[in-house]
Length: 138
Image (tube, rainbow, N blue to C red; front, side, top):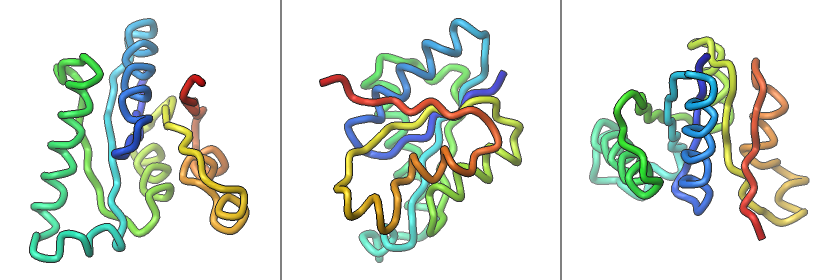
């Protein structure tokens, strides 16, 4: 079994990693931790090359793994650039035979959800496999 933990730099990243690790332990699954940057985000790093940006993202994943109390032994780390993070996540799942995507549910306003939809809802709608959406407990 292959699990894709799709994370960003939100408060949900650690929760997503912990849930993916918990499920992988039960199922004997391989885990990939993935983060995606969009073209708009790249503008924040105008002086950096795409390779530098992707390395910063991979370093961020390593930090999230550490915060979650997970050693990255056996956790594949992937950073990608795509104007649509949801599309990149779905495409990675399709291309790599992922069995389960674990993703955080980031709260956004009703108008935002109506107009553009959240990344998690787009992944749920288009993923080739099951998707577990992790919500922060109140």
